[in-house]
Structure formats: structure tokens, C-alpha cells
Length: 170
View 1 (tube, rainbow, N blue to C red):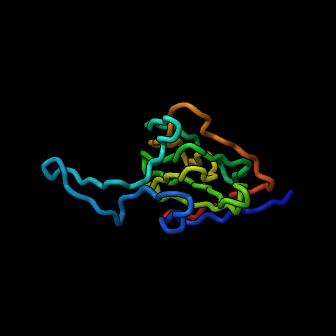
View 2 (view 1 turned 60 degrees about the vertical axis):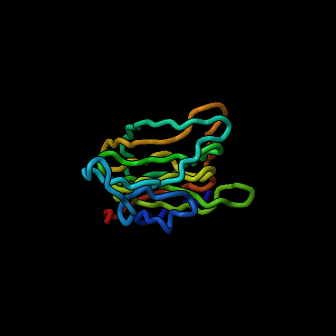
View 3 (view 1 turned 90 degrees about the vertical axis):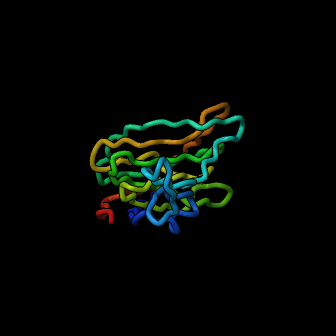
């Protein structure tokens, strides 16, 4: 079995675009509401949950931090919906996604580091690792799908993949 080390890069919209949306307000259009006391940053991600009578779920996840080095052993994907995560305490977190391979097999892995002021919305059928908090216990606002049908497929990786270090976020 091959052993690989995964390089972590800063989370940026263009690099993450094949996998989904980066949810952030930096550089986004906004407008004032509520007697000019609140700025609204609108339509930050394409939420996709309506397949097979699905409905949106809004949840808070409490994630324990993963120690380094961290071994990536498996990935998951959601065939019926997108799945969005946004950190509530401004703490960086790690995002691991995979390119699609031949006939929907898992291809090359990519690792991104959220600044802690960015979230992600995984596009439907995007292979990704489960939530990876780093440093300390972290809370995330999550938008995903409820309703009939199985919406989570998991697959073990054929290679041993390690995240050994993470550079400081920007």
C-alpha cells in the first residue's frame, strides 16, 4: 500500500471551485438592511437539497480537534445534496476533497485550510473527508439535507495519506 503526504494550501474560491463554493464575505457584494444597521451578503453558496423530496436542515456540529499527524483513511460524498459548513468561532479548519476519477472513483486529493472566516459548500457528489477541526473544540453551522433516501456514501482510500503539518492561515 502506497503512503502519501498531503500538502495543505489556503482555501481560495478559484482553487476550490471544482468541489463547490467557498462561503465568505470578503470581496462579495452586499447591501444595507434594517434601517442601515445591518449589511446583507446574499447568495453565498448554491444549496442543493431538493432531490427526492429533500428539505434543508440547519444544524450546529461540535467537532473535536484532530491531532497532527492526521491520517486520511476514507472519504464520503452525498449523491442527493450539497453540504455546507461555516465555523462559528472564527477558528481555522481543514478541508480535504478529491477529484472525480474514472467512473466516479476517487481521484487526486486536495487539502485546504480555511482562515476561520470562510466556510465551504461541497457540491453534490463531491468526495470529501468528514469535518476536520484543528487546534481546539469548534462549532460549525451546517446546512445539509433531510428527507427520504440514502444521502451518504463512504469509501476507504487505497493509499495511506497523511497530513503532517499545517501552515498558519493568512
